[in-house]
Image (cartoon, rainbow, N blue to C red; front, top):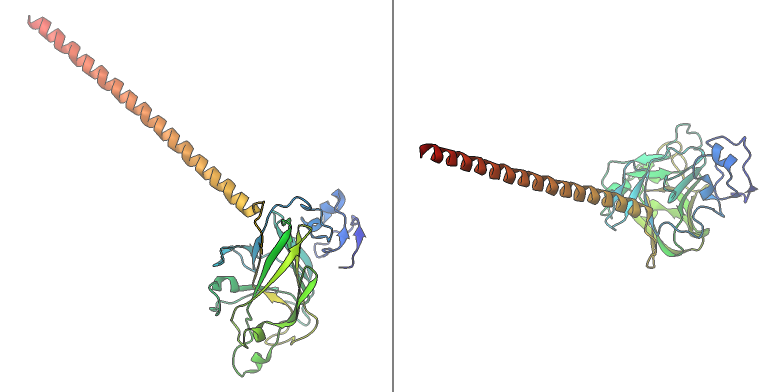
Length: 312
């Protein structure tokens, strides 16, 4: 985040080296030593700049499988293992996620949390069973988006601060929310926003511009709230799901839609091919049976003629 520029030296091979949101130039040497997609997460990203490939994306943070939401969005899974300084970009390079920070006094601090509870104030409990957590800085990126205004929806729910009067209920998770570099929420407290209740969904929506085919959502812990309730290393930003949808009529199809369309076309092609093959086989069998029947009748006629001649 230091506005660094130039090329990445060949010795930079550490998978826990987070160089996102700088101004590095991706070349063949850096692409060979750094994780795939890192160049797409530079501020002057070369990925699909001026050539958009999608007009929306949705992510179920921490989930191992995709989920279809009640808002008709298809939430992709997000179970990449991120450490203190790492990032992940999808194979289709439509979105990415980045984490920076190590949990204090918690060597085994979890970056993904899970709950089997039912969640209130939502039709999509499945979206809230997992959440991605960070001790400092958590960013999501939309890559190759068509330029225009978007509605960004962020969904949260607090997990482990129980409702009631126990000491565990005094925990507070506080962080800031930035979208496209603009602070949208300061000292955001999930549980407080939910009326002091845990396991209750909270949605935040913002209309933001995309001008360089790139969207950045940044959740940042500024050292506020509690750090050790109910356990050591339970603090920092956390999010359950997010999505970005266009406030305009798109001119490009999403990569996922293209992929699904290709699969659909393939399936239709196979079905049509099998149908045609079946018709050809049926026709061949019909013709063969007709010829067999005709031959049988001819043979019967010849036998009848021979019998008649012999009788005479």
